[in-house]
Image (cartoon, rainbow, N blue to C red; front, side):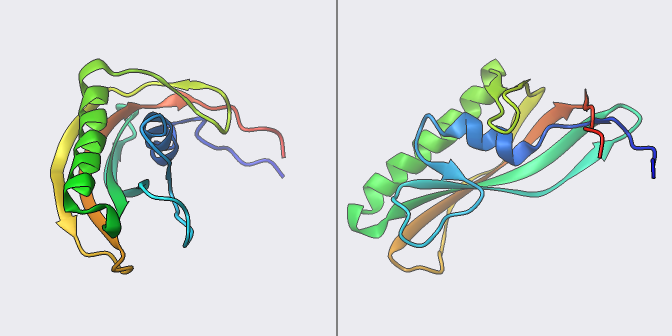
Length: 147
C-alpha cells in the first residue's frame, strides 16, 4: 500500500545538538547509570513549525551533568563551556555531520531561550545546570526508502 507523505521536514534537532556538543565531552539523549561524567544530556522539549515557510524552531534543553565530588566550581566551569559552545554555534552557524546518515546539516540560528541555571537532579551525587536554546532549522528534502 502506498500513502503520500511530505518529503520535506527539519533534521532531528537532538541528533544535531549531540553532534555539535560531542567534541566538548560525551553527549547524548539518554544517560545510563554509571556512565562517566561530565555528560551533556540533550532533550527536544517544545517548539513550532511553519509548514508554509518550511521552517522549524525547536527548543532544546541541554543538561550539563557533573560529578558532585569534583565540586561546584568545576561543574560551573563545565556548564559555562557548554553554554559557550552553544552560543558559538549561533554566532557562526557551523555545519554538523549527522551520525545516522553521514549527511551535513546546518542551522539558521541559535537563540538563548533560558541561560543555564542550577537544577536539582534525581541522583544527588550529580550537579546539574540546564540551559535552553531555540534553534532555527529549514526543511530539507528527505527521500524515504521504499518500504
